[in-house]
Image 1 (tube, rainbow, N blue to C red):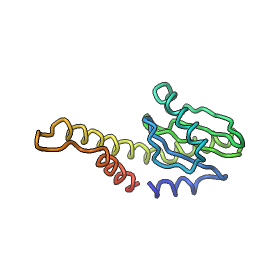
Image 2: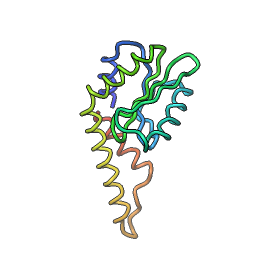
Image 3: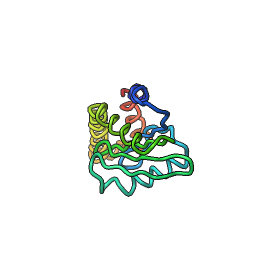
Image 4: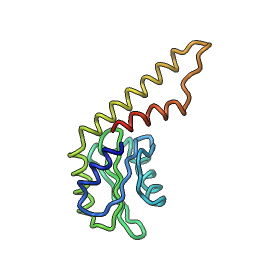
Length: 147
């Protein structure tokens, strides 16, 4: 994940805080302020099932603009900056198009891990313990570390 974030940061033309959030409101990375992150999570909660890929919402915060952009069916990008609205939209579209394959690959890996966990839990025998939430989080973190 750090490699992907570094690559994304290197493409930005202005100072922008960013967050990568799943459609289930899991924050994979955030450099947003706590207030901006809270607003972004609320937007994701409302938009996750309604939006198409490429849809976005802008929100004026106290001293910045927040843009939440749907990158894939499962990932949202939140950008927060004092930059103009048009620049934020261009940056989000640039990130989405440049890194689309990486996000789709990450989406597949996380989906595969989630399906594996469901199979393990439903097929566990009486003497086996189902996978814990901590175990799931560790597996997801290992996948994210690859990116």
